[in-house]
Length: 139
Image 1 (tube, rainbow, N blue to C red):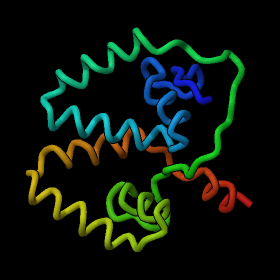
Image 2 (tube, rainbow, N blue to C red):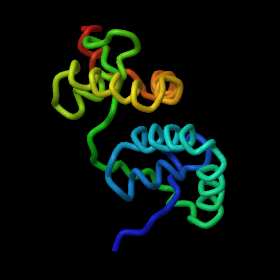
Image 3 (tube, rainbow, N blue to C red):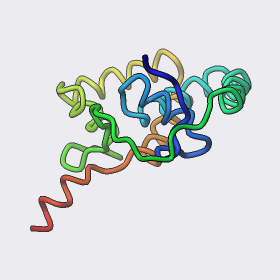
């Protein structure tokens, strides 16, 4: 039976998103982006309270590092227009980057530019660049 723990190693603040990522077997960066997006759309307070409660209630995980398998989200190096976020999402989902960009722009028009623009900027800040690209180019 799987148990939910806060991750000691994959953490930015308290390890809640890292633990959720490990429990759901998805990249914790995706969960962090969802948390930021939901915070923006709900005026921060409800999700902030939920995060603090999760921090207090979810126990801290094992001190031994556990690598779990999942598709990792990286910013694209070779398929970027601005920051590589849409290109990275497209590479992870194995779809064309133009489709992701059209969906992102459509959502910006429907929901307003500010929330998704802030999410994109946060994505540039928290999504790492693909380390495989650097190792290929350094040879």
